[in-house]
Picture 1 (cartoon, rainbow, N blue to C red):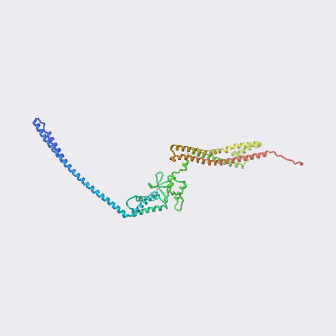
Picture 2: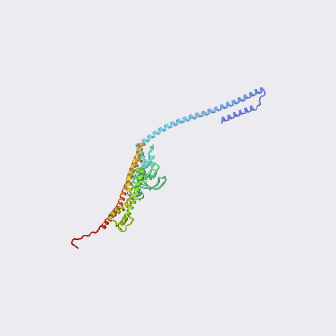
Picture 3: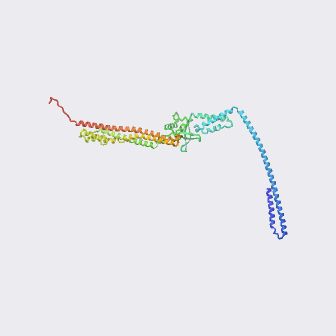
Amino acid sequence: MKTTIKTLVASASIALVAGFANAQSSPNTLDELLQQVKNDRVSQQRINEAREREFMDERADKQALLRRAQAALQAEEERGDRLQNQFTQNEQTLIDKETELDQASGTLGEMFGVVRQASADAYGVISTSIVSAEYPGRDEFLAEMAQDSKGLPNINELEELWLALQTEMTESGKVSRFTTEVVDLDGGSTTQEVVRIGTFNLVGEQGYLVYNDEDDKIQPLGRQPEGYQVASTQDLMDASSGFVGTYVDPSRGAILELFKQKATLSERYHAGGIVGYIITGLLIIGLLIGVFKIVSLTAVGAKMKSQLNNIDNPSNSNPLGRILTVYQANKSADSESLELKLDEAILKELPRIEAGINIIKIFAAIAPLLGLLGTVLGMIATFQQITLFGTGDPRIMAGSISMALVTTAQGIIAALPLILMHSIVAGRSKSIVHILDEQTAGIIAQHAENERPVTTTTTPGRM
C-alpha cells in the first residue's frame, strides 16, 4: 500500500512539471532560451530524485519480504525436524506394541491363522452352494474373516463362523421349499416356488434350475435332460409329504451342465443333411404306399370272403367275382379253353393286386445305399477339413463325421420298417392270389367232371 501511494505522488509530480513546461511560451531570445534550459534542468533533477526515492522505498519493501520468507523457511525446517523425530518415535512404539501383542497372544496366533484358513475354505464352499440361494448374504462375513488382516477375531466372529458351517451341514440334508425370483432364459424374471434338494439341485416349474453365484441369480437350465427325468421333478414339485423318487445330480450341477452340449434327436437327425432328408422321404413314401396297400388288400379280401358265401351271384367289385363272371360266360366251353380263360382273368387281376409292392421293396434296398453314400460324402468332407486345418481341433471334423455316421443309421432305420411293410403287403397279396388260384382250380375240376361222358356196363348172361 505504501509503495502504491509513493508511485502515485511521483506520477503526479511529473505530470505537474510537464504541465508547467508546456504552459511556458516558446523562447524568443537567447536569454529566454538559457533560462528555460535552466528551469528544465531543475525540473528534470526533481523528477530523478523522486524516482530514486521510489526505487529506494521498493528495495526496502523487498528486503522485508525476503526476511519474512527466510523466517517462514526456518520455521518449516524446524517443524519437519520435529515431525521426523515424532515418526521415528511412532515406528519404535509400533514395533514395541507388536512385540507386546505377540507376547500377549502366545499360541493364539496360530489358532487364529487356522481360523482364517477355515474361513477361506468355508467361503469357497458356501459362496457357490445352492443353499445360498435360499439364504443369501452368508458369504460376506466369511469374505471379511478370510482376509489376512492384522486384527484378531473376537468371540462373536468365531461364533458366526461356527454358525455358518453348522447351517451348511444342516441344510445339506434337507429338502426345502422357498419362494424366490427366477430369471427366465429370455431375460425376464418371475417369482415362483423352488424346491432345493440338499446341496445338489434346485427344481422349479421349468424343471432343473442352476444357481449363478457371481450375481446371486437363479435361472433354468439351458437345456433340460430327457423327458422322464424332468417329469420326476414335477412329481417332486406336486408332492407335499412322503417319499418321491427323482433324479439328483451328485456333482452339484456339473453333469447337468453337460446336457447343454449333448445333441438332441432333432439335431442328430439334421446332421444327416440332404442325404438324410432323402432317406426320410423314401421312408415316408414307402410307408404310405404300404398302408394304402394294406387297407386296399384288406378290403378286397373282405369282399372275396363275402363272394365265397354267394358264388352263384358273382359281382364285379372283387377279383373273385370277376373270375366267376368269366366262368359263367364260358360254361359251354371245354375244360382246356375254360382253363385258359380263367388264367387270363387271373393275369388281369394280378397287376391290381401287386401294384406298389415292388416299389416298397426297392425303397427298402435304396435306403441303406443312400446311407452308405452319406457316409462316403461325410468322410470326404472330413479329409478335406484335415487337409485345410489339420487334426489339432477335433470339433472342426465333428460335423462331417456326424453326417457320415448319422446317414448310415438313417439308412438302416429306414430299411427295417420298409422290409417289414413289404413282407406284410406281399403276404396279403399272396393270400388273395392263392384264393383265386384255389377257386379257379376247383371250378376247372368241377367243369371237367361235368363234361365227362357217363358209361354203362352189362353183365354177361343177364338180359
